[in-house]
Image (cartoon, rainbow, N blue to C red; front, side, top):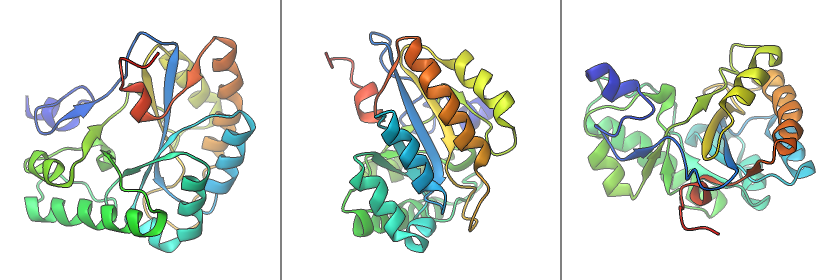
Length: 220
């Protein structure tokens, strides 16, 4: 039961969380964790080419390192979520540690981009005791995923089929435009996969929404 509470994308035992959106529309939410990175502008160009909106769960430390890239994400109209400040695993951490990580990221993102995140994704997908109170205090809703791309360790040849197989109404797909808080991470597999999978999903009749929109069941 503890393993389910901590790691399962569908668990809401330790904090309010969603792992999929409404099934009533042919819509998918693309989400990207660990950014911004030096390669995020290339990803933004791909999304702009296909006129796709996405949600970026950013680390505060990366936003401070690359503020102009974080602002470019916001300027392109994408949604920005909280992915902690330094990307630690939250398991076995006291509530004050969790609060400090989330609050520092929240303040950094708002100061740099002018946007205050409404959504939070835990690094490694690990939730822990005390997170519920911290999310409530900061006004954050947890967001996990329907399918995670494993794009930090797989090539596009494996990532693309995984994403296509995970495509369904209301799916939340998790990819990464950074690698924790590393400088100059290699995200070529992510970029190649996004470039290949977007037109294929569009051919299947899917369109792409921000997390805010895909969680809204009343959107026409």
